Structures are given as C-alpha cells and as structure tokens.
Length: 113
Image 1 (cartoon, one colour):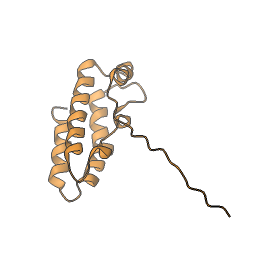
Image 2 (image 1 turned 120 degrees about the vertical axis):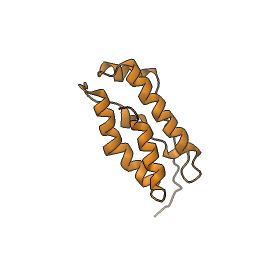
Image 3 (image 1 turned 45 degrees about the vertical axis):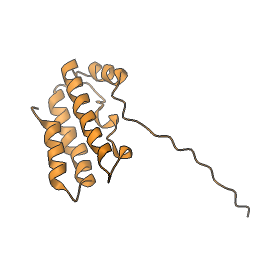
Image 4 (image 1 turned 180 degrees about the horizontal axis):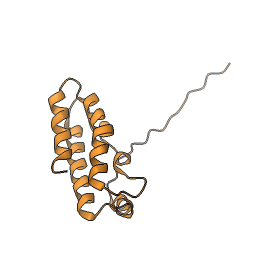
C-alpha cells in the first residue's frame, strides 16, 4: 500500500459583522440601533477574546451565533436568548477557570436589554 503525503489547506474564517450581515438582520426585524448594539458588543467581546493569551483570535465568536434565521417579533429577547443559550455557555467553557470573567462578559452583552 502506497502512503502518500496528505496536503491540507487551512482557511481562517473571520466574524463578519459587515453591511451584508446588517442588511440580513434588518430584513428579519432588527432596527439599525439593535444591529449597531449587537455589532459593538460582539466586536468588544471578540477583542477581549483575541487579547486573551490563553485563547486568541481563533476563539472569537462568529456571526452565525447572532444571525437570525427568521423574522423576529422581539429582537432584544432573541439576543438575550442567544446570550443565555449559546454565547454564555461558550464563554463559560472558554473561561472555566475564571468564572467571574465569563460572568462579566455576559453582563456586558446583556447590559440594558
């Protein structure tokens, strides 16, 4: 049996909170203020994750977490649910040895909702 070398290509995927993402969200009921709020909070969170020497850029939270798939009656409630059920548990896992850091990050995402 011949053993050849395997070659793989690795592609870095970036969180894309761009105009296309904003337009998609607007089509599903998020007003521009809510889109801006989510974008700002997720960018700040991803900056914090990137700056953590135990995590880094590859652990940033992607836009798929915060891209609604259907029209939303309650955008703030939807974002709060995403934090509670998806992003929050991820942060708890990232900072399992620093639960206060995860709690602080979740509180900053929820502030004023």
